[in-house]
Length: 104
Image (cartoon, rainbow, N blue to C red):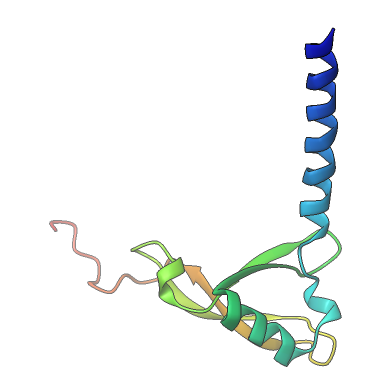
């Protein structure tokens, strides 16, 4: 019986932490452009809420990207700027650096 109570308590505690972690994501729309830029500089990468059902990760440098990805400026809606250049996003480039060589 004690094990069952312990398991129920663990599940309840886990669900509380899970919901608070989801709510802890900063909302880009409630910040100024400068505040958002400084947060990314301070933490290196931040996942912001960007809309009612959307979120996006913003990074400060290429060390947060995969080896085949490059940095592209990422804009977001902030309190004072609808298209704030917050930081960067990691994306695969349209055309690879070395070009298209099938025999590499």
